[in-house]
Amino acid sequence: MLTRLRTWVTRSIALVVSLPLCVGFAVWGIGDPAGLADWAGRLTGTVFGALDWLYMLWVTGLLVLAAWLALGRHGRVRLGRDGERPEFSTPSWLSMLFAAGMGVGLLFWGVAEPVLHFDGAPGVEPGSRQAARHALTVTLFHWGFHAWAIYGLTALTLAYFAFKRGGSFMPGAALRAELSGRWVPAVAGLSNIVAVVAIALGVAGSIAMGVFQLQRGLFVLLETDPNSLAMSGAILLALVAAYALPLVTPLDAGVKWLSNVNMAVAVVLVLVLLLAGPTAFLMRGFVTATGDYLTGVVGLSFQLFTFESREVASWFQGWTLTYFFWWIAWAPFVGVFIARISRGRTIREFVAGVILVPTIFSVFWFAVLGGYALYEELYGLGGVVAMVRHDVSIALFTLLERLPYAGVLNATAMALGFVFLVTSVVSAAFVLGMLSGHDANPGKRSKLAWGLTLGVLGAAMIVAGDIQAVRALSVLGAVPFAAIMVLQVVALLRALAADRRLEEG
Image 1 (cartoon, rainbow, N blue to C red):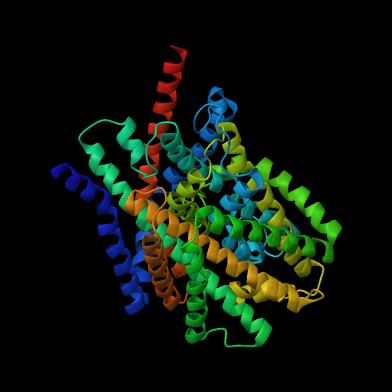
Image 2: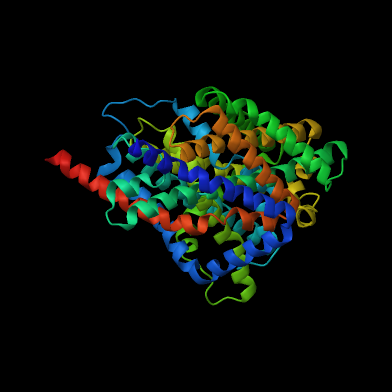
């Protein structure tokens, strides 16, 4: 009886601690949004100022480690039993991991970010042709290999210990299995709590940004009030109602179907833009951006602007570091989700699918959406920079207004953004249910409870009403989880070495 009670307490502590903590953040955000945003901004700013060098080295190291694992002797190791086949087809697997990892973010920033860097990234003259080229390179650095390496190493660790060692998907499972010392149980338990909070805050930030963008889309289509809090609330309620049904269906019947639809619509949208816009220019931009990114990624990985002005350092912290922290904040969610759907893949196949393929799609996406916006600014009607300065949320829709059948394209983009949000929340609620209940297939009540909590957290960030505040709040969970990732990677490397020695006899 005592053993069963101890097991129940151990398994419930993540839920008992993290759920009230998340609700507390939501109440604080709704009651005092300015106070919460200011506190989050000061905390992340302090960490950025003191440890920016360490985080850049760590994220770059993850990318190097992923390449070494894929190309080295561990590449043939299968995440599961020898000869086990993957649970999902490769197209469905790629669609699910991509939709969970970045879908709504790509839609929100596809036009806005390259334009903002064109107007203000350090190192080039703002508004110049060189600035346009540099803007795409910087954007791809934020959304490419480094981001997916963060996701990939987190997911690989969880998948290895779950499918090769028969453990759980809990972030602390690898620590318990491979590390020793009196501190390990406490840190493993804390890592589970930190992961849950990081997931909740990170996904809530995406909900807020998605609602902002959908509201601006309605303004373009129907001339509704783009700043109405009541309209924001109505969109959020519609979102909660939409993701309630997939939360009570199995993973393969819910998220799999939504993800496949998402990717199909996203591909159609980007191809329409490519063919309706300056096709030759956009394809040249894609090739050029690919080359610039591949040749410049090493230098950017170690560029900390040490001897630049305070304004440049502020830009670096507000963009590059914030993005990397954002990916770390999402890592426990996306990592658990990718691990859960990756049984049967080899490490080489896993790294290629999780890091290489999504990066290629991201390069194409930004080259078309961002490239079209830059073309309009340099050679077309202009006004794109002023538009994005006014409101980053409206950038995509106002660009689509310049194309034939603008109403259809804008409605498609809105539907895509809405379904991307639904997919992200459903995936996150599934993962939160797993982590808080130690259950690889969480029950309907658990998923619905977390879905509601994410909606309330999203409401708190919507009330904050500022994109920068939302970003600061979203990355809070990344500050402690980065340290946990270090321990996870150490555990993975030790386990790989030990299992290889065992195989070699």
